[in-house]
Image (cartoon, rainbow, N blue to C red):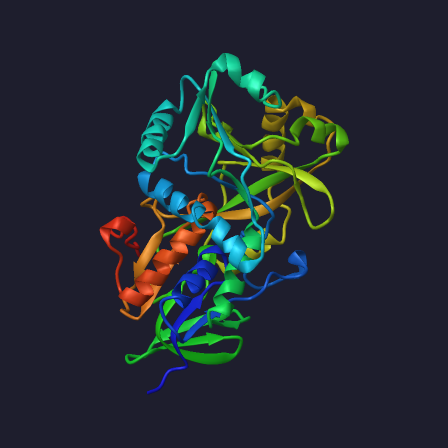
Length: 394
């Protein structure tokens, strides 16, 4: 039978929109299915996405070669995407890692090795110089710094998704603003139900992030843990901007994993206010049902986690004292392999792209390209770490 589309991509987030853009240069007959961001988060009872935000750290400094490579490939395309779409999303303000002499040095050593492989320029900053160079950061005297000045900073994930979607549509992709609720392999093609309508395709890529298992989108669920995360926002005034206005993106590795923290530079949000955002690695709540994940996204996150982040923040950045603090929910989608999934399911016509492991925003354009290659060519080669990205199913 004739199908409506050759390829359908489900998920209009950072990976799915990127996959649609890349695939539009490889083939015709493509549809991208996904809802727009809800206007009222706390009144919304459908699916959500963690890219509904204004800032994510981007860097190539990483202790894993695959993740570092994905980030470097994506970063090298940021300016082209901005120029072609007319949408700015990348601020190259640099990224600073700060770490104690004891604790995370194995990670730092691996990251320095990966950086040499990728040709990234990482400046090592001695403890005595760290506080002088970055006076906003009150780390202990035994902390060293690792500063990536170029190919690092932060991206606006909302704007990046808009840019990817605009270029995909310009490339001929049909945008269907609806939530996909069913994907079914019929033998000769795939049937997708979205927004009460049915669409057929030769192949489908499910790129629905943490919501990939919450509808009948896959023949079998992928093995992932969808974990709750809380982020804190410090509202900054003129006094604080004088202190923090020129800071890079910052990641502080503590002696314990629960003390790790990431800090975004001051960013203006849609409400007109400027915030410094931070988050950590603490997680205690996981979701296996759409209703539970939705309830989390409608909340303000965890009050206890917000308080923990605030304590760490004030230790590291005393100048934040007195600033109003708010919080928001997020989710992290973890795989047991530590890698994203990009591969076919039990059906040779249904592929999956998911598993950001809380570090994928910066790499989303490259992960989307891998999803596009997977659909168009049927496999990923070693140069794309295809073996490492094999999905695991529950």
